[in-house]
Amino acid sequence: MHETSISDTSCVIEILETQISECDKLSTELVSFFQIIFYEDRNFQGRHYECGTDCADLQSYFSRCNSIRVDSDYWVLYERPNYMGYQYVLNRGEYPDYQRWMGFNDNIRSCRTYPYHRGGSYRMRVYERPDFGGQMMEFMDDCPSVYDRFRYRDIHSCNVMDGYWTMYDQPNYRGRQYFMRPGEYRRFSDWGSSCSTIGSFRRMRDSF
Image 1 (cartoon, rainbow, N blue to C red):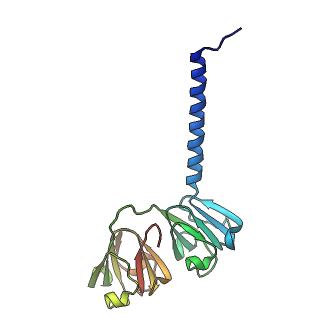
Image 2 (spheres, rainbow, N blue to C red; image 1 turned 90 degrees about the horizontal axis):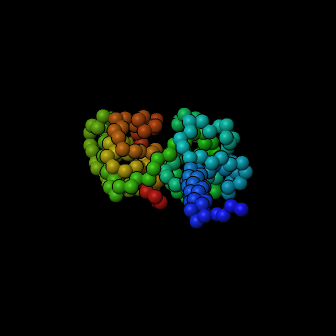
Image 3 (tube, rainbow, N blue to C red; image 1 turned 180 degrees about the vertical axis):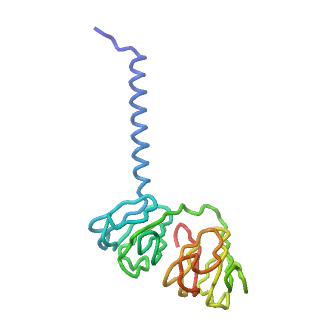
């Protein structure tokens, strides 16, 4: 009769511990992979789709979107495929109906994700004219009224130096949204707008 030695038992225990560790790692990866969940109906009901990366065409996964859960990161959603149309900028939280993300309708056809901005600084320069011409003003904090601070209702170019920002075409963070990441925007079409009117903007943070 074969007797199990201490070394054999240790080997079995080591194998089991390795397998458990790998399972825990896989489970963690699966949980963290799905960072946003789209639901066809309000209050997180109906068919849903879990997503963890950029997607240029969401049409095959759901026909409409009336509620969303965001588990992590910043997400920019687009009304049309290929990152076109209205933009909606979302951070971590629950959105039980599309009015919560200031949606104009229940169409979401593409999305992009951006990691949280870990740095503590935010800095952006806005310009009165295209190609960084005319009057300039530098901002490092939220601006609920561009006209009150900048004395202009139009911003034709912009240089984002630090942090992620969201611009709105109306004051007090209302209306159409434009996601701004670090870079140079020589004309308003560079941030996806059809006109130069900007009413407000604010820093993208983990929570508003």
